[in-house]
Structures are given as C-alpha cells and as structure tokens.
Image: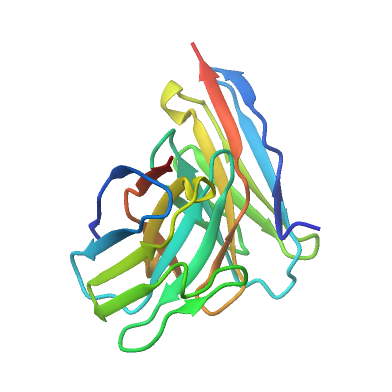
Length: 109
Length: 116
C-alpha cells in the first residue's frame, strides 16, 4: 500500500464550482499534514496546513480524519487560476515529508 | 517563508559526466533537503543535508552517486555523478521552516536536468 494516495484526476470543473479532493495515508504515526500546490513546471508551494480541528483559508477548507487516516481539501467558487496539481503531504516525524502523486485540477471558463 | 535559489535552473548533459547543483537560502536554516521529481511522478526525498556532518540518505540513494555538501546554514550542493539518461529529472532543494503551527518545507525553483 502506498504511503500517501490520491486520485490523480484530472478533475475538470467550470468556474464557480465547488470541488473536493481526498487523500489517504498509511502511517498512523503521522503527525502533521499539508496541502501543497504545484503549477506546471514549477516547484511545489505550501497551500495550507491541515489541523485536527479543520481549518479554512478563504475559499479553501482542509479537514483531517485521524481515525480513518484521510485528509480532504475543499475549494469553493473555483477560479481559472486554481488550475494546478494539488499534493497531499504527510510528515511522520524527523522533519521528513511524504508526498502523494497529486491530483490535477482543471478549471474551465 | 524564505527566498531559495538554485543554480543552474536547467542543463543538458552527456552521460558519464557529473553536474553540481547549488542551493542558496536568504536566511540561516537548520534543515535542508534534496528531492528528485521524475516526469509524471511526485517528489522523492534523496537526502537530508546536515551542516557539519555527512548527509543522511534515503533508501535507494547513495553518497557515491549523489554527494552532498552543506558548508554552512545557508548553502548546500548536490552532485549527480556519472549521469545516465535515467537521472533526467527535476532536482529540488527545500528548507524546513514553520508553516503556521507546524514545521513544513519550502522549495527552491528546481533544476531541470536532461541527460543524453
């Protein structure tokens, strides 16, 4: 079983739509969780951390379910500029991160 | 966050040669890392660059192939030695910093390597 699994997509949505991505992780000892965004031919950039209580940053909402070992990202009112690959990232300790393969999002006019 | 630069940004190399990639940070950081991202794949950690001691390599990566230097808290180099076409990839350095309430990593722009 892969350590961090994501649906690769692509998710094709129109502008203004709401879209959700899920991610599962295998290491129950994982301590911290993140969503990164990677644009084509660019480096990954931190989108948001994911906290146990759930957290929101503008149009983006992240949730963590430790019992089921999954993380979600909800994007409301999608913009064309949201088109990117979204990477689910897990830290199991010692500052090392494990990356999922990413979910591609395409927002169309 | 931090400003991270990498040189070169891209290169095309002949097999059997070696390439050294530099990573420079605008502030002192304890943790620096080197990753590889092959086409269509996610990021794979090569090693943790330790200041003042040998790098810590992940399974499948060895010092002879990927020697790393970390002379101070703002700089590191990764060398890809005796290159083959399978080494064609994007190589990224990252630094560990606080990201909200949790420590996470911020990435340099990457070095795109093509080995012929």
